[in-house]
Amino acid sequence: MIEMQDVHKSFGENKVLRGLTLAIPKGESMVIIGGSGTGKSVALKCVLGLIRPDTGAITLDGKDAFAGDRDAYLQRFGMLFQGGALFDSLPVWQNVAFRLQRGALKRPADEARDIAIEKLRRVGLKSDVADRYPAELSGGMQKRVGLARAIAAEPEIIFFDEPTTGLDPIMSGVINDLIREIVVEMGATAMTITHDMSSVRAIADKVAMLHDGVIQWTGPVADLDASGDPYLDQFIHGRAEGPIEAVR
Amino acid sequence: MRFLAGIGAFVLGALAALGRIAIFAGQTASHLVRPPFYSREFAQALLNVGYLSLPVIGLTTIFTGGALALQIYAGGSRFNAEAVVPQIVAIGMVRELGPVLVGLMIAARVTSSIAAEIATMKVTEQIDALVTLSTNPMAYLTLPRVLAGVITVPLLTGVGDIIGIMGGWLVATQTLGFNSATYLSNTIDFLQASDIWSSLAKGAVFGFIATLMGCYFGMASGRGAQGVGKATKSSVEAAAVLILAANFLLTGVFFST
Image (cartoon, rainbow over all chains, first blue to last red; front, side):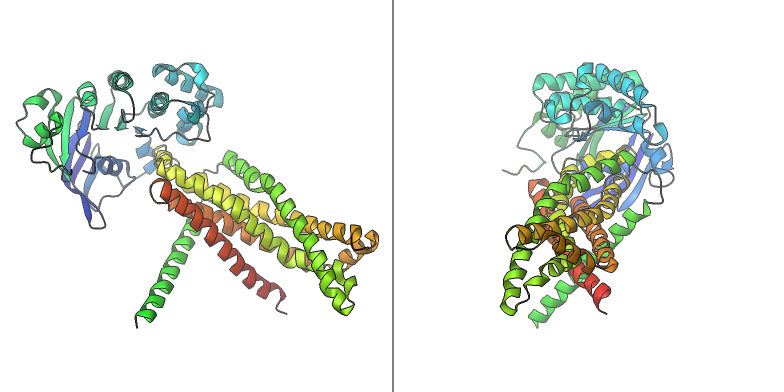
């Protein structure tokens, strides 16, 4: 279980997280929604240790995220970045098998390549993509490669940062379905941040809404439309009027 | 009063920046003794920093050597000292122009390329991706490049020195009427081992500065295209200034007696 307890994080004068408390039980798919600049990405990066919170506790299965062996901690995670974050200088298969070519999970090159091709197939890409470079792929294909990289080492926990940003609605639907299938198939714990309500409904077991640096509402995805929370209602219906101030 | 406060703020800012660069250099060096060592990235860096810089180094130094021969001949003829062209070209190229020109060309070609590449990786979250894949960016990106700079730039400096001298020889023998064998023997007889070692040592220091600045400013880049552009520009400016400052200090150390 991932637990964030009263997490605060500021950048200069800008207080982004103001006491974020959230628990994600093992095997659950949690989607965090919220407006731009509300701290969704910061929360995710705090769990991964890419950003260190000012105060508060983050634990994984009861152990402090910032104590102990960082490599062992990070080996439990896979991450799909918003823009894919594929390494330009490496062909696709080496991107996917990056973790399998170095460190504690290192495999022989042939085996790592075979696993990469299998994962590419799992996300709907043919093996001929393996030797191409990321710059030669479309945005949708890059997302799929990023997804293949996230699952290559079969992590227990997978994070998805805006998985459908920049994709057309059909490709978004394909990626959402893939994410849901893979998370269920692997039995992984998932944490997704998104603005895209179709992603929320396709991926989430539970939803948390982040507003003003705290969790404004959390509950099962089935309760989303009947929450009675004015902030959540405004967000999911995309209304300009409501308690969330919209800058015009 | 405001003027003095401005000077104070500038000095404090410069010292803080030097401190950050020193810490960055220390963190980079610490990965020399902490596995893993990424040999494939190191080999790639050797190729990019060293081998692929050869054409630009060759062209820069051959033209400079030729121009130097013409200048010395023209200047020397004012007091009947045309015969010193081989000696002055040799000492000028090996002690000063060779290492400095190579350092500055590496700053232009390699520092800018490293800074732009790493800054783009930062902006596109590739550095974050490395961390999540249990790979330390300092060990994977910085150390191989800096080590390649320290190893290959002295070699490039040696090559640049030779090509520069040959540029002078070419001009002297083809247009100024020097005898080829005499020119070469004067050059070889005049140069001392300390001239060559000091040139190579300068090259190592300049290689370290050039690659470190590229990595430092790349890693410290701000967001977006503007952040990448600023990191690239700052890295080249810092590398060029530090190379010239280091050259002054090293020349004092090597040749003050």
